[in-house]
Image 1: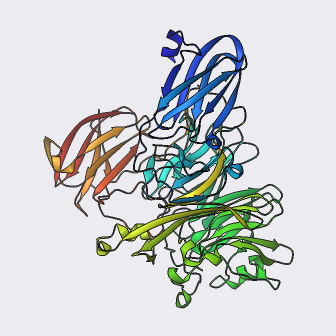
Image 2: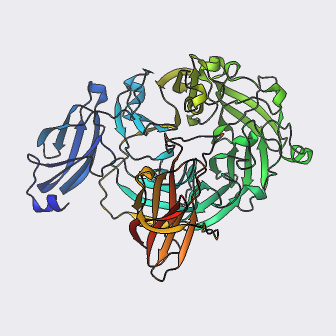
Image 3: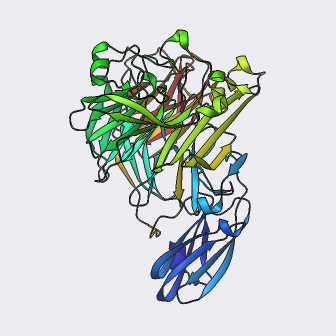
Length: 605
């Protein structure tokens, strides 16, 4: 802004800033002044006319215009038209798309159907969050490692998981409230970290999925956050609602017993609907009390008293299948439940587990009667496509209107050209399978009255899909200061003292150690031998020593919904220490090889 204020920029000679916030390379900002207040319309020209993206900004004399929808590696043409009839055409050359931006292998739709909407895919593996237009061209991507679901808030801003990992494999600090320009308005920090999903309530409060950071279990807590302060207003702990040692899916572990991957608030019933992948169940709980209302799923393996009180019985003469290891449940205006039924294993009995090559995934709509406790399957899509549409993990559905739905199968994998048993992304990194060829696919479909009006295929795995216009109504540039709300949990220390020699020497080069300090935490990154004994030390000005354990044992995860934080070398370990509870200055040291090494770094808290 200093450059803009210092210059004399006009419509004919505007200030143009490509990628103004450094994280959205296909955006720009155009700034200029006019002698009288007037509206400004911009048109980002498409490679073909239907690809034009346009937006009109309100009358002003000081014009700060965010430009969205540029093409990568292209000389883009942008036309600016003022309400005074003055106009100017400028060009912006962008850098080529990086390899981490996945290019579609096919798209089937029309420009009339998509209009100015883009299909945004958030990644599950080594790729970036991307927006594709009607032709399959990339018109937006974020170079930050943002993750999980991308949603638009009522104020037009976006809500998505941050790129700040707090705990492996994919738990991040919380949520960014941001614009497509890359401007981050707020970061909501959760003590337990964030995963999978969030929901904006009518009053603006945020439902966010989390966990207790140092508990023995994960992905089994939901909290309500005040959007102005970041304070936690309410908490639901599913360990107090469900038994944890019954009715497990084929992927369940004691650590990840529920694996909550969706949350939805229903105003009509004042209830929360949640998807527990590792119990093959969708549950509905009372918003106020947290008490169970009902459960959708195969009742096999559940205690009979729960089955009798909370489970539905299939009714009617139509086709019916239960959902298994499902994702992305949605409550429809009439109370019906839509969900992506991954179908992984498709049984609660190991003897009847189905191989992926013989399985199917689908979007399905269930109609429930909570008086009679009956359930009917009234719509599905995907079963007829068989294993080629099968995704053992991730995915979502969207309801737009009656008969108008999206079904996103984002985790398809092949091994040597055939449907992969297990997760292709996991096997591809296993030396045991190094001679096999693994390919990935993501298929996003939209249907209107069962007619396929959109299908996008991208050779990568994507967590979820969201169709959005890139500009929201009445959007303007907002130049406010960003905020961090909420607070990290205090990092636990250990009392275990490793017998080590104080060397006063720097860390040996083979560790490739580096320290990155942020405002509210720091990270020691280094490469260790598997199982090596190591500790991070903080030495205060009064010589108090805080000891932090470093886990150097490679870990395996059965449910890798987002693998974008995975390192190519499992010996490459991040050790995060938050500044919560710290005060003053601390020297950072490393205990390894029975020696205490100096980093030469002092952090302040």
